[in-house]
Image (cartoon, rainbow, N blue to C red; front, side, top):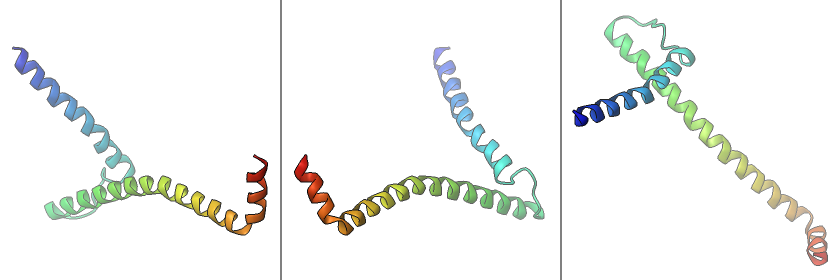
Length: 93
């Protein structure tokens, strides 16, 4: 039926969005090999890999904001250090 096909499509799309994340966790965050013992060790390994993944995402988001903030500080300091030059430039415009 159409309802069932649409439901299956939603499920497959959801799964297709998760699989790349799991692949990155396995490759980039050492989830492929577990060095801890037992089920508790498995849980610890997954939590550490997920925390590292989320921390990296957070740092990448902060990186762009940091550079924008740093650029604004540099512009502000340049205006404070060279007020005469800026006023001359503004008068000629």
